[in-house]
Length: 272
Image (cartoon, rainbow, N blue to C red; front, top):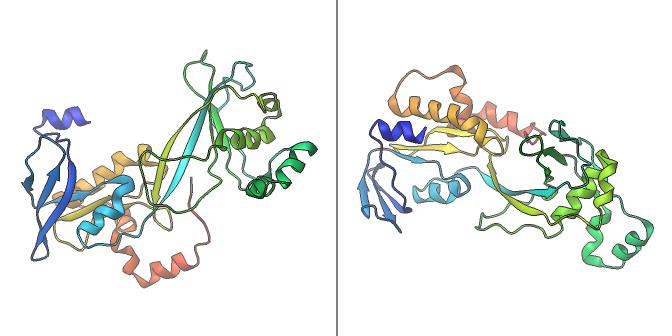
């Protein structure tokens, strides 16, 4: 998609955004740094698609976007014992659970106050799938058991216990994986931030500053939803007819009393 845009005349500039200049309530220019681009670029349109930095960039416009971020990590390891079926789909455990510990482990954890949470109830949602071609030994495991809101920082810092906790939670669904407890092959931990709204619905559309637009809060479904959201935002910017569902993604939806009442009774995270 980037190559097609460049073929149509678009230019890709790698730089950091330092500020957005607004005059008389309208976007006038952006200031850039840390790159080979001009330090100041005149523009009548500015799209905030800054992912985890969505809120910080919004503040450059004087707009407080209703978003927050959570850290989500994934663990990859080599299933050299061949315990995870290679033809398995994405598997998700949808019940809360307590981690499986033997009696000796429980006593040890009870004696360490900082480890007490490991004996408590963990949320639903541990999931896994095979990764790579059919003969690949790689398994991906994911479990976001901490949902604290946080300020994004890079590189992200993950819980050092994430691999073992996730493996133990997954072994409730696939007991054979207990063979790896205490001897999990060296894992690779990676991940990033889910930036989301209260109801986990993206922000796509105009901001209160004329010429400013937002496309963000795509949470954990950005790879899937970003082309459609980009198409929707392009319709906004170009002034072409909007589909009926466009109103559900507008940042201004929170100004609607009926919508606020809907959120007050939401009671669900909307998390995928």
